[in-house]
Length: 517
Image (cartoon, rainbow, N blue to C red; front, side):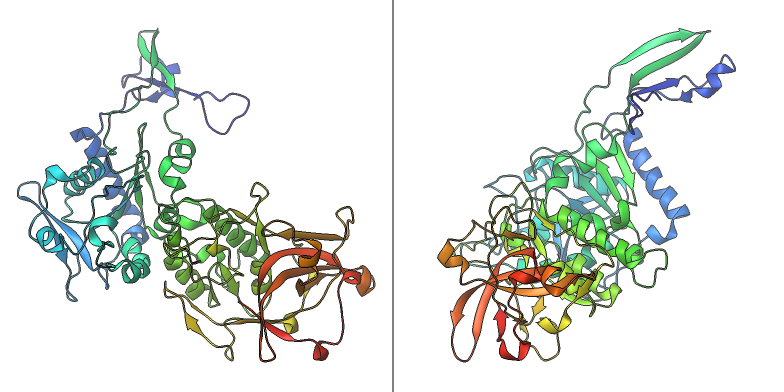
């Protein structure tokens, strides 16, 4: 291999024919610059070898027979007796299946199951009518000697003109679907179902040299997982982060190369999320905080065909995180009874985002997500840069939505959330040039009159020996939406930091506890 400028990814490969003619040739890798054709027997043989090696040497990657099967699967028959139909599983079923991870594309003509064609598809589906990506998934699954395949658009009843389908309930089962699959087939380079993933590979030009009677090949380096997979079209899709994180193992089909992987950062750990679990002594609290913040930063930059899926497409993974970390939370916010609630509420729009755009239903109404959650918006987010171990948190200023005494409701994706209660304090809006004051508004900076209606919730203050007036305070900024003698309701307007001199620190007993909707 040859690297340029100490780059992480090599740029060229040297390989040779199997028989070494000289001692020097022994240091050159045996190989050939041309990969076997996609969908050839040699190609599928390599894929099967990947799986067999993993089964033999990585027992944790082999899913045990699932206790909870997907509601529906595609029954494929076998190579000798092919079939294709939707099979509704029974409580006693327990067998292997693969799952397809793919982009839906722009539509509008998606190949889907709905109430109108469900009975027909339960009898038979024409292989010839399938889009290419689905055909390739069927062929690959059969070549792995697996008889069942899960594809979201076919195994979930999709919404039609006169029926809502069962997406709302099936979406909550994604944790089980992907973590129990025998393996995931990822169509990493396909932009949509029509593209397919068993496609002719892009050419990899090579030069041939004779060296002491030995044939040596020089070619472009073929293995670039970061470029081919992590930066590929599929990785831009919002659902893929959960699919990849929950999968035991994944085969990535690209237009350059086929990759087999069972580990992708901390998300691909077969025992995810052990790397950020509290009992894992190798992972301190600061590291866990940075990991989950980076995780949500990445997710917030992914794209959706339907933006209303944003809080749903991560719910299975989030559920596992909350369960394994033994904490409360939802909608991208964690509450461990210490400081995670305050930290995760102090998110802001990313630097390259000028204003946050709400996710709307077809009716034009916003989706049912609290204003303090970034999942109700389409845009990328970041977090306030808070020093680890150097903030005194103020738990008395806020009551968690998951506290026992708060009223609890259930949002449409099954995530339960109560009311966020907080002490609303007045503050003086500082000038733009004042270094002790900075607010990151979710939308345009309010008018002078609008700014006077804003309040702040103090989340914490920098650990310092300076007087309160000079100490930096980290705040959630809120705006009124409904005021009455019985209850004052606010919504989030931004976050920021300011010296204590800007904040009204009247006795908390004289201040109102408000609801942040």
